[in-house]
Amino acid sequence: MTHRSIGILGGGISGVALASFLGDDVEVVERRPSIGGLCGTIVEDGFTFDAAGPHIMFSKNKEVLNLMVETLGDNVHQRRRENKIWFKGRFVKYPFENDLASLPPQDNFDCIYGYIVNPHAGDTPSNLSEWSYKTFGAGISEKYFIPYNEKIWNYPATKLGLEFVERIPKPPMEDVLKSSIGISTEGYLHQLHFYYPIEGGYESLVHAFAKNVRGDIRTNWRVASVARDGKQWRVTSAGGEERTYDTLVSTLPIHELLKVWADAPDDVHKLAATLHYNSLINVLIGCNEDRGYPYTALYVPDPNLLFHRLSFPKAFSEHCVPAGSSSIMAEITTNEGGDGVWEMSDEAIIDRTIRELEMTGLADPNTIVYRKAIRFLYGYPVYDLDYRANVTAMRNAVAATGLHLLGRFAQFDYINSDVCIERAIALSKELSSP
Ligand SMILES: Cc1cc2nc3c(=O)[nH]c(=O)nc-3n(C[C@H](O)[C@H](O)[C@H](O)COP(=O)(O)OP(=O)(O)OC[C@H]3O[C@@H](n4cnc5c(N)ncnc54)[C@H](O)[C@@H]3O)c2cc1C
Image (cartoon, rainbow, N blue to C red; front, side, top):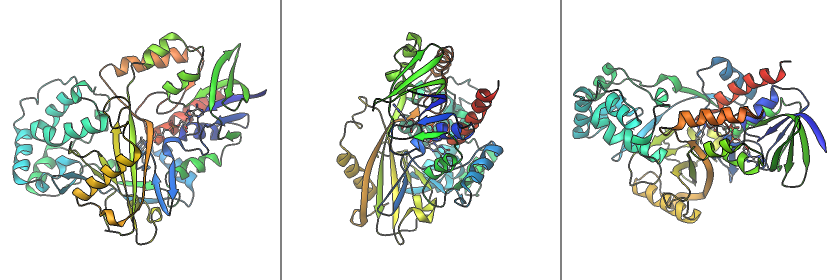
């Protein structure tokens, strides 16, 4: 049986970045044939798609952002965000309240009236719906913010908590008033310019960190059991290999870890069962024509359309499509056993997506030369009203066993790759200190 000092379960950005900050007595084990996890990229027939959804590189933490950019070396460039909202057949700038003049006149009036004459302005909100009414008023809430959020979260806005509102752009009143009469403003400067790999999609970032790993990375190594063995951790693979580690870090989704962690405390099982997540089905479409859409992403609040967001990989890098071609990714939030969408066949999802793209006039089915549906069971952790208390208790109960959790679905936190790296740096310091 092989023994290593530190074992890291999962080869997404969290696991690989952590290994890159540690010494050589470290092993990363990943069940898939390639590292990448949610940062993974599919390259097929000349088309490159970030399979879980469009990924951009940005961070409030300038040190981490610099590290990401430097680690990619020459394979990185900067792009400008061109996000729009697809509203009643029109392209409206993102965020919505920064471009009210692009709405049909009655919608523009309803939005600006609700923003100014807002009976909820003085409320203390206790859920996302109330927060939206207080912040934006009835028009913007009912036409855009609530329908869009209920699509992406697949959950009633009245049952969503306030944890992620700090991520939502809130333009000053002056900007909203200007936007209604057609004076242009730029609403959300934080991600206006972002970095992206020139070639290989976002997964290149994980491979770039992997080059700095002095220990081992094993792929096709599915963790089948985890157990405490005295002071060590014993881990076995589905292929029958056995390891012992002094220190164990899991970046596996907590719900997956619990399937293989035989002696996990009951509390952890009970708490994890309260944590809700959304799954994703992404439809990847390649076309042999290029309409020259300059958009990075289109947000789609219309509840009659299945996808909540479309993105255009060519806007991230010209290398994402063959010359003269274009591509679109449609993201669909779903829940297993909940909404009937997860249960649809890939073909049915693809057909419906293509029909909806044709209906909206955004793609011509006759030009489609590549199509694929890809599923992610774990897409978004849902911040419901009990989330904070339950997730904190879950993390504490795991920490009491000595096992370290790191990453988006291990810690069950709506975080991006930059925060995964930031936390990997912090954990590497903790593990390296005597
Ligand atoms: C739609 C969407 C858009 C996003 N956009 C951005 C963005 O623009 N910018 C950004 O920075 N971030 C973005 N993110 C977030 C980013 O993808 C995640 O924060 C990051 O990839 C999480 O990495 P991780 O290593 O923590 O987890 P994961 O990537 O989930 O890694 C866990 C790994 O564990 C492996 N695994 C699971 N079970 C086993 C097992 N039994 N044995 C061995 N291995 C196993 C999995 O295969 C996986 O590789 C986005 C995410 C989504 C879903």
